[in-house]
Length: 537
Image 1 (cartoon, rainbow, N blue to C red):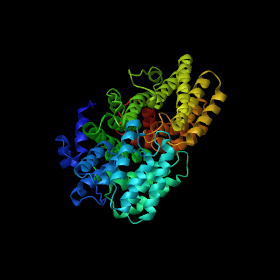
Image 2: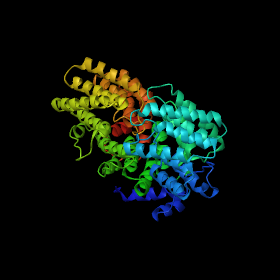
Image 3: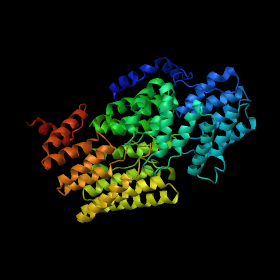
Image 4: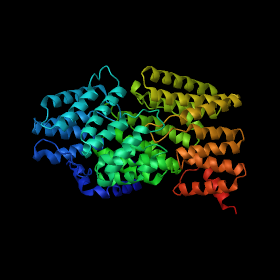
């Protein structure tokens, strides 16, 4: 995938200043060097310890394909090193990533069994090997969630047995975060894991796993501020890792720091293109498009939209890649409130191959249904709504509870706007309030920077259509608490405050919007209104 603007090239090159010596190695196929500082003592020969530390560092940055290569090379050089085979098994276990496919599970289970057979002279290492074996046990009949829980319990036992061992604590924190239930709004396990990691961060600020997993633990609106230091550090200590370049943007997105997110994802997309694969590159592109659109940098977002190409289905990050392909065009139309464009979206051939990518198609159908409803094309809206409902049912039947619920929220939103367009305005408002409450009770997946359009923001839009700006204002403000500096929530709040006579809030919001969009190049009417209002005395 190629970015078409020449000025981007300069930005991309500048993004690699921190890692320039090892960046040259990437160009010539050498091993990466700048992955952070990891010291994982093993009972294998001292000669392989440096390579072992590098391989563990790759694990900590989710560079799974490279980690398999590195651990496999160690196992080949030293067949008695059981921990090298543990590393291979760990590289096929993808916590907080795309669920391992059947081939990953098969290879991971085989490596775990072989590691157990080879064994180790160290009790600690034998327990590590036993723990990853617990994850793969009965993988053909037991689901991912209970196996994650069992693995976390096994890692807790090792953590309790070796409380001063930092790598044990770090891997336990990761397992604890991976086992956190999706619906728990107390974030109890995330907070517990974060507390373990914060103590280690104070003594090991250059450890890639520590900063990486702090970001994952606090990747929620209520917690994101606690990960800002880690986010700003991760790319600096591990600039050779494409994921380390991207992951900080999760926190930048949560906090509405759009330029930092843009810089992060430009660097990540470039690194992924050289070292990982299209799926990781597209994952960065989705976050990048989202950030551009919040600053009304619409030309840059369109360049991304026009450059999308599908990853191979064998790509380890294929789900993230297909998610981006189906979602970026929807974002581009909906964030700009181009309803006709949204209604007319067409999918390239093979965009949604097979059931694994159903959540991506749900985003696409949602955009079409919402766009059609907003321009009064009710037959088209209802057809896409029917398809969206079928996708929800398909996800539920396959046991994909999270994505089924997300599709159901989208169905509720689209239905509310169809009802509104059909004249049932009071009913539509009840439906929209229910959809907003439903979405508030969930959290976003790490695969996405945010909902294609947030329900709470759309509730504000509907109240504005009712000419109830005083009721719309707190809805926009609530949306901004969950997603700070969103263009449409901020401009909506400004307009609602203006029309309800709250001129201080209106002016403050318009000024904030203009500052947010200092690099804007889109023809958005909200910006012209902001300039006019802000100029008033």
